[in-house]
Length: 271
Image (cartoon, rainbow, N blue to C red; front, side, top):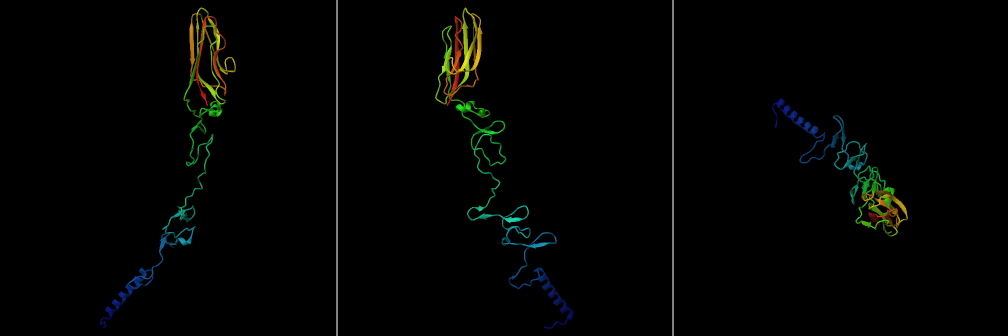
């Protein structure tokens, strides 16, 4: 068929050429055929408005600084991106290099700087460091290191009383226990009652030992006028004796004629 109008023919040819050229530009300079696209240009990511980098795959390895599409987990190490490590047995690896090892509980343990350091035994703060809670044992009851640590309240106590006749020494002892047992006095009470005779100063002794023997742990004085009586009770004590030793509360001597003295002591014993 002939196109009679030469200008009309030139317009048709020019239009077809322009469409073909435009299609080639849109497809990155690659002419494709119907019905399938045979090739695409390389995918890229924008680093800036003027710079584009081709996307790289994981085969490129670590220390990549650009072109990372991030389709698999990557972590920034401060300079570049590295692949997250893992294995088929445990999955993703976790960095535990900043976690401390096991800690053996001990006295004088300072406050931890990392939260994973957990005190595994019962402890109390002594004002500066942490100490294990003491039980009411023989050694811990008088040890200087027991200060600031809680002791277990004793489950049972004992009480001793002696009320002799007038002009007779008042004395009562808690007999010695086993080799490690210590007696602890928690309260003492004494009374004197005078009839026609006044009572001069009389010592009341708490002894670490039997009657008239052993170290005097504490002393008090008492006296009264004729036809008078008085008692004194002191509680809240925690006076500890020696292991395997008796503990005694007594008047240092017999009171005056017609004067009666009594003594009483309560306490507990450590195992």
